[in-house]
Image (tube, rainbow, N blue to C red; front, side, top):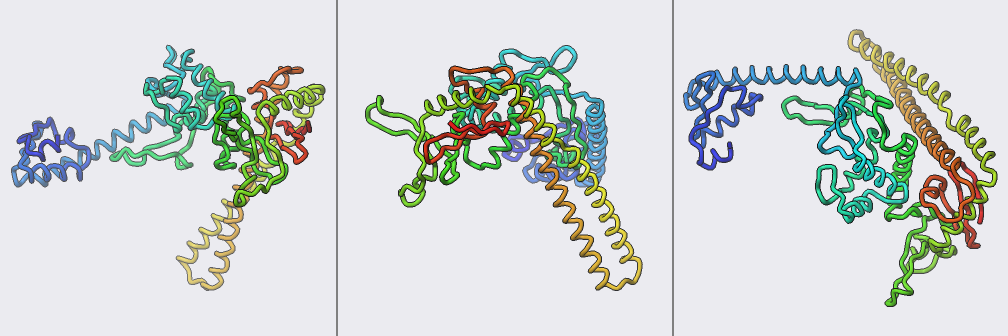
Length: 441
């Protein structure tokens, strides 16, 4: 409407009240002045104000300020109500654009079977080697609609689904918050406000241990950088025993479709000016599948012993009690150092202190504070790695418990059980399973 008025198409704008025109004093006055310049008058019915009257600007400033203050008060009340609801464990979802769930009679998420299958398909594709981009292409090619009903999927949509804890039957609240009630700008909550996490709040679409395994895989791929690019369960899992680089999928081209084939080969083989620098040979997918069946069958011959070993490893290697204790001690010392440093700053303000000595002491406090921050960060990382490892072993135990000797390649079993495969110079494959066991075939 402002644009239409500035284009000379509107002479008069009739508004119920100043508070309906704008909730921001600056916006209100700026737009009124802009409209005046273009010959458009505004009439406020409730206050009986005509903006062409030269004496009304001060009155408009006061009334606009009152409107702004009213807006702030309403915003605070709404914010308080939302945060109180979070504390009480109540939450909602953007139901019209949330794939897999609809609002149930009790107000909690209720599974939509057809959409839930799409969610499970996305998680399955990712654990079988798919990337955000390749999964988005696959969903688009199949004609599956996005959560907002669009035809084309975006990688960010796939990522949001894969990382949304709602699908495991839990809910994290206050992940973002509004920083300014006027601009309505939101930002990620990075500790400025408390978060609330509700376990088992509703029926899950993805079993919790499978969801957690996907989060571990996401973190693993982040550490690898750009190593995972194709929709294949073998991506980022085959390692060269000669140089340590990953194998990549290569297509041997031929004019005759009959002789065209795909193989996996070390990505670093011809890095030096086209010359071969790596002595490992290529391998076909058929060979990988056959050798996996052989290695897995050797593994499950002692299934009971392996499961017992896994459970022992979980107890010993994945326990975080000692780390939690160290983190608590470090945080306590950090608070103490911070308090001493602040007290020293206040003393320096109030009393005459030798500045050379004070600076030396202050430098020690700052150095120790930084050391404690680094220690806490390192311990938190170690704790996360242990918890992630625990989830990997848990998923491995659950999957291997169901299996006996297999006769053919199972892509889900491969994803759940294999950590990596190292191709040796002698052509032998060393399968490293997620329980730490290694079998050479």
